[in-house]
Length: 150
Image 1 (cartoon, one colour):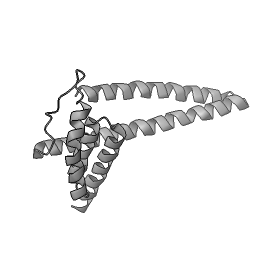
Image 2: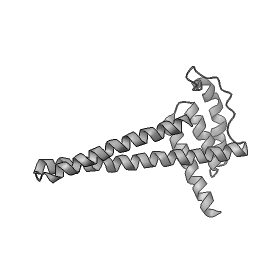
Image 3: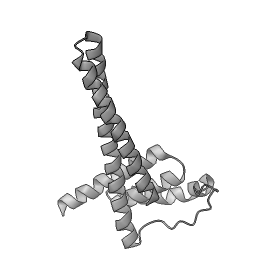
Image 4: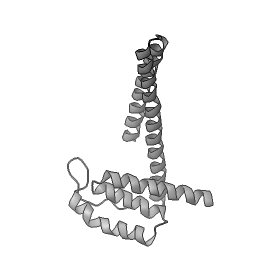
């Protein structure tokens, strides 16, 4: 819950910042001077790209949270019995030992969103955030495909 609140607070702060940038962009374009107009147009791109990125990240978070709740209700979340650092993150060596099990599950069931989700958690525990997000995105895609077919 604390992470969700932090994400929302950061999104609100960024939204305020982007509104101010948008205001400056309009003010620059209203001057009628060529360079100011060009700068104003360039500043318009920032809020558009940032709003898209914020929306995408918040949607990713909401979708992964939904899948966590489903897996938790089914009892399908991995048991968190790995030794952890002081920060609470799992020790990489211990997480790496568990990883082959989740990779084999995906290889055996490549269309299972549950398997992909657990693989994403295993990647995250091993410290590979890029692959973790990729596996979680695949899990979300498979879940949504399954829901449309149902």
